[in-house]
Image (cartoon, rainbow, N blue to C red):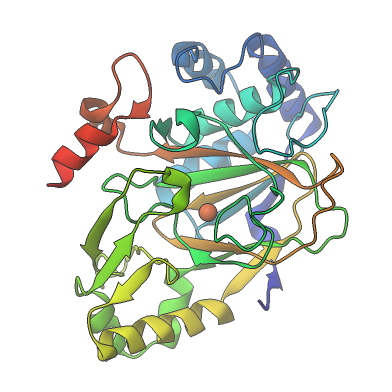
Amino acid sequence: MLCQNCPEDIKVVLSEREALQLASSSMELARYDISNPMLYRHADFEDAAQHLSGPTFDRLRDFAYTGNEYGTFVLKGLPIDSYLSKTPVDGRRPSEKLSVSEAAAALVGCLIGEIFSYADEKDGLLIQNICPVQGQETLQENTGSAFLEYHTEDGFHPLPPDLLMLTCLRGDRTGKALTATASVTRALRHLDSHVVELLAKPNYEIKSSSSFGGSHYSRSVAILNNTGSDTGFIFDPSAMVAVDESSATAMRQLHEALKIETYGLCLEAGQAIIIDNTKACHARTGFIPFYDGLDRWLQRIFLTRRFSEYSSVLVPGTRMVDPTRAREIAA
Ligand SMILES: [Fe+2]
């Protein structure tokens, strides 16, 4: 994957004052495992997030509504746990881990959307750990370490996230694992109008990823959800099959255009990338894990801007989407 450096105007470093505010609120709220959907108390986070003030926090609030042409925002200077345990070899949160990085992610999440999870993915955890898992190197999953193909997140699901945030707790020491995004807004500039028209037809069958275990989803989608100035997309060539050759060719052409418009970075501890999942797909270059407790470790949250649409399908008392209810609304 050829990847240009992320433009400077989408990278923001928290000022000392902003970082202190976020660190102090995160430590205050990190008193329990907030990734647990049965324990998470959203009102506390909402309340604390309202008190975060400063230009970076204002930019984040703006990003939720106005976005940018890259569909991407890079944030630096996030608090993480002062003592960080070994990178989990099974991709699960170590029981001794404090919740500082989780609390910071949830607080930033409150500025740009509403946090939620899927009950049938990764135990419904609201903050999920992304680490290489031995034996899963070649999977097209975040437990793998081979090149992770371009995709928007969970496009097969009737309620995919609008935004996702990946916070880095421990970077890849080899510098090889680049997290990259490519926006449909920029890619469309490379495509002819007849290709755009094909991509806007519901001629693509998309299937669920193995991270949803025994829960299977599939649906027919258009790649582009409209062809106007506010085009969004669903794109996952590893999980999508076109119904005919001309639709398949159009998908390949979009793929090539996205490759031209790919920007990324090797995330370091305390950095996060926030991705508008309706405007930008993401990918990761291949890297070599050592499985020695010091491998790359990210945490992921999903956010929606349409929480009222989700509220009827949540497991009561939680922010987890109930798979049975989700399938009912999709039917
Ligand atoms: Fe992903």
